[in-house]
Length: 267
Length: 292
Image (cartoon, rainbow over all chains, first blue to last red; front, side, top):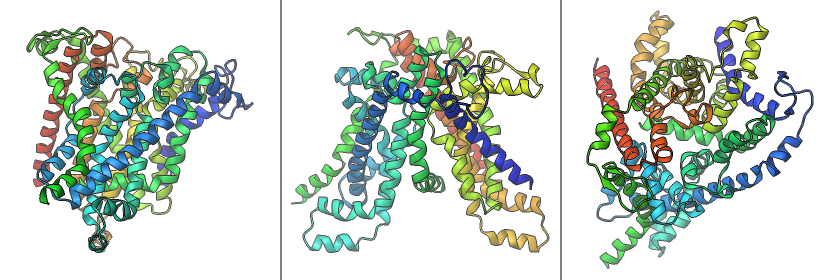
């Protein structure tokens, strides 16, 4: 039926650019400007080795991994602690603080990176991994706290009540009961934030001056400026950058879909 | 006892609160303060200029308003083409149960890619001399349609807007699909029994129930698309001759290019205020539409 044709056409449009990216990465600088074949005649896998070593993408890849892992870890710990408190613990100003976190999700402040740059300079954290990591943790907090608090609110209290009677401390409740039960939501938090951090560009651009600290996205763009002629290497670099995301997406897709649709239905 | 208890509870939110205050709240407030100064970001002394930065934005900065129009154009394409496509696809998938998960998987791939990857790949596809689009146009005899898509002032902005839509429709698709699936099937059954055709079902059941979802998607689209800029950096860097400039790029240029930190903040405040006003108008408009 016509509907099927429509759907397949759109699907092809989604996939073709990626296919073309990989196909281009396997050609050579000499042939790529004339060879328009969708399947390359020869497979020059050495482009990936060259991009990794000479192009420096090995270093940038490791940087991206490092930032993604540390920031996700930081967000999981910091936001789950806060979300648990917002849900289960009482203290003055609890609701106000929660609303401040939520308001941050909705108020657009374009150009706040200007002040962030100035602040990091003052704290001597600019061009440092720590500075970038702390900024990125801050960026991911609101959404993660919201997701986790919503989950904790729905969590039945019996397990915690029993544990508390047995003398479990608050932090013990968080670690031994809340977190294990929250695994599905934590999966969403981890995947969502990992995607955002891996793909992040603007903060990395203004925070890092040193090449060796840069993550993939920023390095790619400046690579394109320098190596503007070597397209196969650039395409290999793009593939190296996109592949982890696609793999994580294919494996964890249902968590991403759950996160997006839950947010939409709530909104 | 009670105090110790409360302090313990505060300790749970302390890390989040500290990081959030230092790296979000303080810069947020600081932007308003910096917007009233003339400062290059390095010198220890700033010059207080009051509202002069804002005066300059509204009277002298033609490129700023040009960039605002460009962002508006891209947003318009997103609101119409991108969201219409997203809805049509969601509607098609809602009826077509079999391959639904497969399509849902594919359609959300562009959104999870980074703007840099998307921008650079499409830049390569759209290249005037060596891009595959022009090659195919020539191959099928449409040579005269070939353009320097990203360096021709006539086509650059539309090309960027379409790539942005390519990357973005997956979001709307997911949200529309989720919304469509909350509509109880019995409503459609009952309508069919009463003799309604597909158009009637759509007009009287689907459309009214989907209005809140459509409003949400519209507001998110406007907010997100107006602030888009990384894709543009990757594709055209704002060229040719400012034809693809957008507001956030201008702010970045004020900061890094002209070293005018105060002015950049003033631009940010202006832009933020405009976005808030637009969102407010959208929200009020949607309330009226819901009551109708």
